[in-house]
Amino acid sequence: MGQGIAGSVLALELIKQGKSVLVIDKPELSSSSKVAAGIWNPVVFKRLTKSWLADDVIPALHDFYEEAETMLGATFLENRKMLKLFTEEQEKIFWKKKAGEEMKDYLDPDTFSIHSPVASEAGAVLQTGNIYTAVFLEKTQSHLSTLQYYLGEIFNHAVLEIKNGSVSYKGNSAASIIFCEGHLIKNNPLFGFIPMKPAKGEVLTIHCEDLDIDYILNKGFFILPLGHDLYKIGATYNWQDLTDAVSPAGRNELEEKFRKLVPFAYEILKHEAGVRPSVIDRRPVIGKHPDHPEALVFNGFGTKAVMLAPFFAKQFVEYLDGKGELDKEVNCLRFFEKV
Image 1 (cartoon, helix red, strand yellow):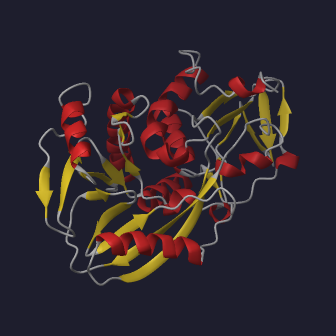
Image 2 (image 1 turned 180 degrees about the horizontal axis):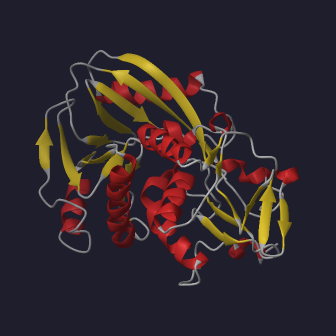
């Protein structure tokens, strides 16, 4: 239930493994997946260390999205470098040191100078890129609809029936139900024990004719080229206002950061917002409800859904088939045991 990035990835993985699914979703309920930049980055910039499970999840995401492009007859995977602008010489020295050690697969040791949009020293992150999330979600929904695997409506928890070994919903029966509700999992009567810490994010899509870059630029925020002189810039973090409504404060924050870095004229074409489904320990929540094993959750991927969901979708399907175990760090029971 739910067709954001995580729900879409899981649905396609289930279909690939020969399962029949019914995805129930009302896109208007949450927009975080649709507005997401879809960037994956294997590097934690603060310490220049590998992102969690980077060595495993990066190959998995390539395998999944490349197969998905074939399945859906669409192109949405983009491999490209990410440039991190240095603020001081010591940062450049540290970068070179890490690139020659355990980060050699993800950091280019050859730092260099750029002159546009601003003169700066920069380092390149390797094995980065983005998926065009709106295309991926739209093509996935179309594919599910063609297979008659899609029901476009708001899910009503009150009419869900859970019996020993099966579930039923408005005349539809299945062995299990999987909740991929994003931050709205907080309203789920079965999985209310999950301590969510959602964060609203806002992004801008702009037209800037003079910028002319084909890489992702990072300096405390990102600039993602979309082609045809269009760029997505973001993102903000707000833990108080958990609505999908855009705000003047969010727009001002992004414009201020952009103008400090880019001297060129631009036009704002879109201002969008969505609430990221982050969990308090910053790990996904996956697994079976302890009292109702027919009800499962696949959620909480936050800002890293594009990167993490393919790896854990495969692990999750193997777990459903009794062929493997869930990583303890993502098993939802880690929170239930503390209730």
